[in-house]
Image (cartoon, rainbow, N blue to C red; front, side, top):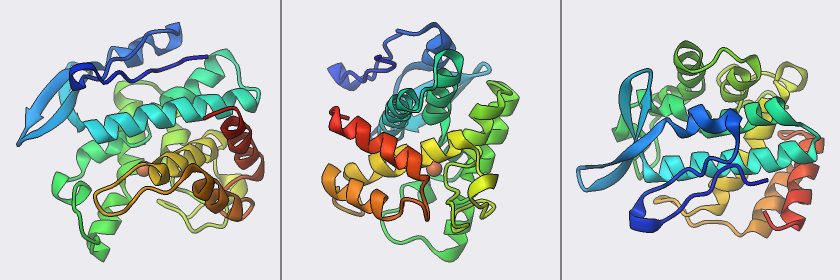
Length: 222
Ligand SMILES: [Fe+2]
């Protein structure tokens, strides 16, 4: 099933509308804008425009796609599967409310900056609840995507049974996509090394069943 495709033509990302549940989400993206030499994608939520970097939009689409594929493996269907994809797409939307100086910083973040960044899950879930949906799977997926089974995650340091299943799915998709993509502050890791890393933390940081689903997806050419 193809949920989103990113097309590079004219550097504009287009959303292919292939699923009725995702139509409202596709409508969020309204165009492109250049901000201080950087090309940003404009999205519109509740009548207001926001600019997100191409990198953030591209990562969001990848996490939506990977989460959707894992969701299929985990036997999610129809609206529940779409909730996973929507949560995947919106998981980092809370970064809109954190200064670009911190989000785009190339060097190491200070302790104070790290604490600010850690709030993006909560900012995102609150924003989505107010303007997009009150669906609990979507909201908890966003709120929990940096929580880890052993309690080492954030914002609350929740443990295994306290973390929503959608949050656990988004967490694995997020780490997989983030590590396999080039970032200004580090080189990208190969798919194989990334799977090894995630697998090494299966059962401690990441849910075992969900890691198995990622491996299955990779075998089929993620
Ligand atoms: Fe995040």
